[in-house]
Image 1 (cartoon, one colour):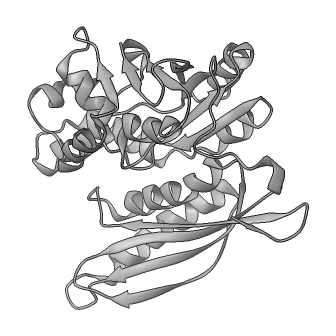
Image 2 (cartoon, rainbow, N blue to C red):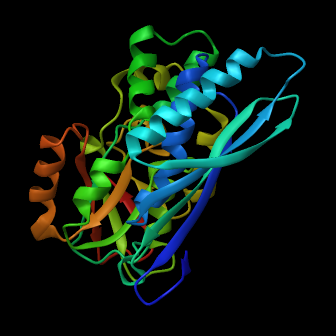
Length: 296
């Protein structure tokens, strides 16, 4: 974030990655939704964007690139964000994403820490896309599971972000590569509060549980667990597959919002009525143990 005046700051972000689905148009949509997410998580309004492209010109048809860019542009138009340019290079491996610039009032920036005791945590999208993408790579994912995962990843966080701004929000982050527990850890790490995750209330794609039980887990999931297990205490009643889902790295995941307890039900109902159907109360901020997450 860069403060321009007392009333205006800009938020600058970028993200790009290799394809996680076979269809180039869908890949473009996912990449754009993912790149916009950091702006939404900070409470900002994305305004402009630029394409970032690495493309194997000698080995891949340019029609593929055209479809990727079309998918990205269509998602930007849905978000009411202007594409102002971009840059491309020849590369042996296809990559696509965007840099995004948003605006915000300097006093209204939401950070990924600062949650208060008694806050409830609302998660706006279902988990499990990383596990399903891993199953897809092994040709073991059903069409239904893939469709659910894609629908989740191409959905903008725009509606949820706009609705939360009308409430008392103490912290917000988007759940992406570090998984729910990884990003939740960032919210309370080094603070005087702890967190409790309601394992059975966390939304997830049903097929992700099936694939997790089969051991179809992305490498990033294991890295997330190894990095954060020192501050996470998981109850014996939480099944192994659900533990895996809580660490699952997401692409274009939902928002994790710390909201004042008195506003929680009203905000949740408003989100669900506005089409954010997977939104759930996934936990709360607690006084003890400080700097730890309890999963029960």
